Image 1 (cartoon, rainbow, N blue to C red):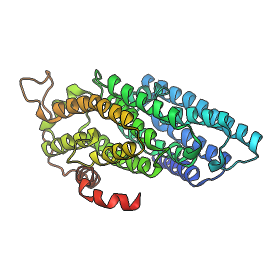
Image 2: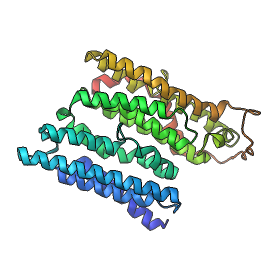
Image 3: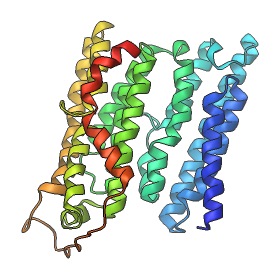
Image 4: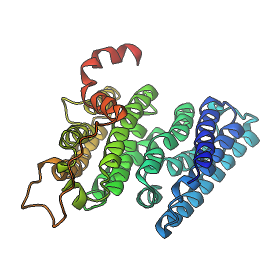
Length: 346
């Protein structure tokens, strides 16, 4: 792709995100979402592969439907109440339609089917954008409208999302699809707590973005798209493979690592809200996710010959790992000690 065109699309992406997260009016928020969608489409389809074109088409149709539902929801609310303010969403039908629209934008179950397919058809760098920055505007709208939304509906969708994200990721062999189901599973943790403590949702989202960015950039630098190629990349950059192992365990939410922090705080808050069964269900369902993270980690670092497939070993690379990957990986592993400071800010 032409560098100038890529620069324009990246600036448009940042502009659309900024417009949506800084707006109070539904129409400006909707306009920001539309700019975002149109800016990411060329980045998805830039390889001109039929799979990429298919992914771009699926993404466009899904996001267009979700944007139409957001506009319909805000217009219905304005018709009944005269309010266009995002925080003044009070009409029950509007709240219901908005919940479905934002779930479709985010890829939250049961509106998640498009996300793994789109991620699989995109390059790893575009997949990173789809999994992180493209989720920020709808997450902001969810945050602002959360007092008006139905907590029971959000809890049901969250548990369904965690269950489906875990189950459907079990038999995958493509790294991008595994990360897509990982994203769906994490969204369940964010959605369940948003009605009770929205700041915890944002904390979870920020930490998820950190860890996912570290994993995507690592996979991009070792060029691993399948588990079979991931098995032979430990010879390429051994130190990076070892750090990928820890980052994946952090994404799974194992205790000594950063990923345990949001899960711990969410379970604590759910217990305070007398939602112990929901907390228990989420904890058990997160074991499904742990299985496929362990599978990825096993393929990345623990597999040794003769267990590997008949792939040629990759050449050992002596060039240094990029600073961004080093910083993100370190943060993805070591943030747990600052947890005593979190309750002060929440």
